[in-house]
Image (tube, rainbow, N blue to C red; front, side, top):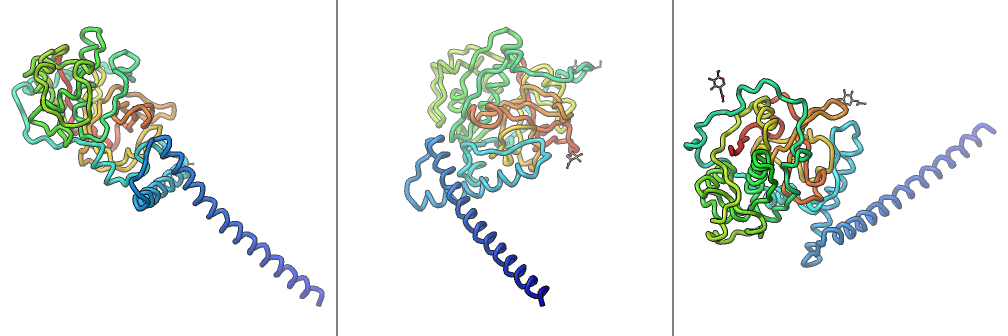
Length: 341
Ligand SMILES: *[C@@H]1O[C@H](CO)[C@@H](O)[C@H](O)[C@H]1NC(C)=O
Ligand SMILES: *[C@@H]1O[C@H](CO)[C@@H](O)[C@H](O)[C@H]1NC(C)=O
């Protein structure tokens, strides 16, 4: 009898505890929703984002929430080589992000006279275990392509700025807008590729400075007078042998190198060595400005991006190097090329 009473009592106690837990969970779920609203508001202030109406606000909030939940889920998995975080792309779907902020186009033609040069660095035998062209003073500060598919112009310019500094000792910031406006074989803000831009620089006997022909982030008419005030020139360019990370390593040990890759997975990248899933459908261009090995032994490429200083590691991303596929992670070794001074 006494034991039945005890059983009943413990049953009620258990039910009571369960109900407490449920109501607490319901409350914390609600709080979470509120926290996300707060986070979204704060994020909007930080990024100067205003929405045209309530429907848009609601739509963007949903996307922001999905992204935030994805970030927290991913980071909680632990034991990753990289982390995700909020940034200026957090209220966009991945499709919107790729459509708005990338801009690499697959080459419309292959081969041209300058490229018959062959691979300059094929006979290089000694390659240092790490390289940092930023520390060497061959990289200008991070730039921002804005809502314009001009990544190809930024990738080209960073490679030319690099080889110019290496050969002359002068680090001069050069004009992406000149390339956007004047490389008619490319499509300006609708995309392009770097070899066409190198070709233009040779034909034009050079490229002018950022200061002389500043970036606008939209398609403009080519300003021939400014474009003719060349400050830096190159005499050739060449492709790194495709699908060969070892060849890419040799080239980067000698100068910053333009590469195309699939950047779909970069939207919420915050820090560390990106090793996530990606395809190899090239849609973005960056410039590799170094390589190394992390303290945990992960090999990486160091790439300069053109999404501003607030994205990634102060505007840079480290990407896993020497992966199991010949084309490299995200196709980074498929279409690399470099200017020749
Ligand atoms: C972390 O990842 C490394 C490399 O992928 C693996 O060898 C190790 O077992 C993982 N550790 C844990 C705790 O999952
Ligand atoms: C590399 O070495 C081979 C054999 O000596 C030579 O034929 C080739 O021209 C060299 N390549 C370069 C780029 O110097």
